[in-house]
Image (cartoon, rainbow, N blue to C red; front, side, top):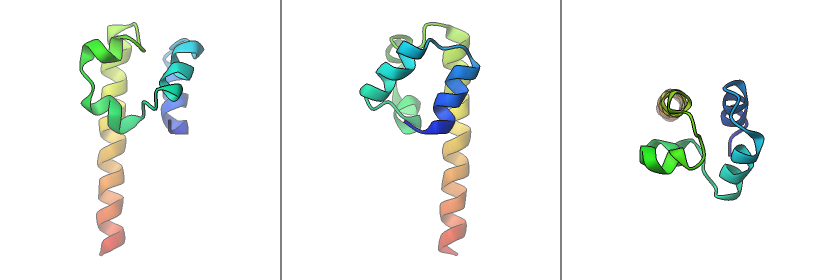
Length: 73
């Protein structure tokens, strides 16, 4: 799991044990984007936090993809 994702989850007050379980289960930004809401709910109880983390992950992935294109140019 990426450090920025852990920091974001902590800023949303997601319980530390849930963050640790996500790490054990290898849940990262890319995985979060393809999970169903039901699957995310197993790790992140609050609906608002789930919506926020999906938005965060999509923004980070978009930035990552842009950087990759720029590096190739």
